[in-house]
Image (tube, rainbow, N blue to C red; front, side, top):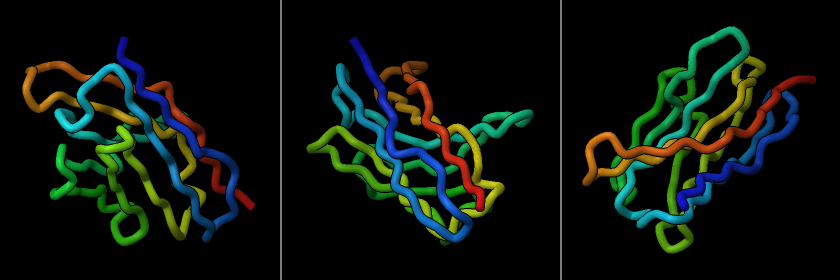
Length: 119
């Protein structure tokens, strides 16, 4: 049974930092490209950051470049999103996504973790 579980969300003041974690089980983690997405109320889900299966390649939405960093630890089956200089507009539910690099169309979502940036 595949499980994707996010953690680390919460309430933070503008300018603050948070680290989100996403743990995967039931899959060969290193066979999956991983990404973080977010969805704010009334808006569509959007890609925030993505990382290749070995971690050698990353990409970011323009809105988070130079503030967020995605990383992964394949030994721990975990991907992270380090978020710095948080802004109120970063408030959203953050979702972790795993996509197989070998099986077309195979992917999994976590249940999401709420991030609220407010004073």
